[in-house]
Length: 195
Ligand code: SF4
Image (cartoon, helix red, strand yellow):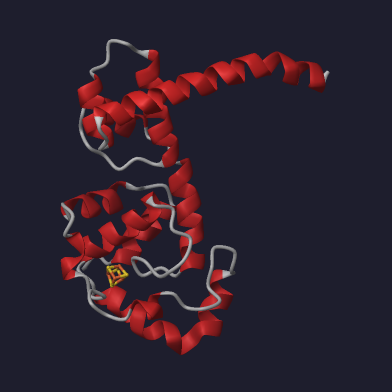
C-alpha cells in the first residue's frame, strides 16, 4: 500500500514522529520545493479565508467545501518527500495559517502543539554530537541548556547540529545563562508572594 502524507501526519499526531521526519529528511537542501505541485501556482488558494488555528477543523472543512478541493488535491498529488518537508517546515516555523502538507491550518493546530512540546532526548543528544536533526522548540532549548551546563562540549559540533554559527550559539548560551540567573534571583520573591 502506498504511503501518503496523511499516514505520516496521523502517525505524528499519535506521537510517532519517525516516519514524517525520515521522509522530510530525504528532501535535502534549499531547493526542496522545486518539485512541489504548488510551485509557481497562485498561492492565495492555500490561504482560505475563515481557516485559522482557533477554527474547528471539521466545521471549517464543511463550510469551505469546494474551495479546498483544488489545493488539497495538489497536496495529495505532491511527491511524498516534498509534502513531508513542506509540513515539517511549517511546524518548525510554527506557521499558524495556510494549507501545508495536505492539512488546513485548523487541522494542523494539534500537530503544531504536539511538535512544540516534543522532547526526544535522542534527537537532542545527536544534535549535541554535531548531527543535524529537526528539533522542536523545547528540544532546541534543552540542547542550549545542556551545552551551557557542560564546558567540555565541542561548540563547533553543537553549532553544526543546530544549524547555526558558533558565534550565534555562544550568544544564545549567554542569553540562556542570563535568564537562568534572573530566574534564580526571582525565585525567593515568588516564594514569599505565594506564602
Ligand atoms: S504539500 Fe501542498 S502546500 Fe506543500 S509543497 Fe506540496 S502542494 Fe505545496
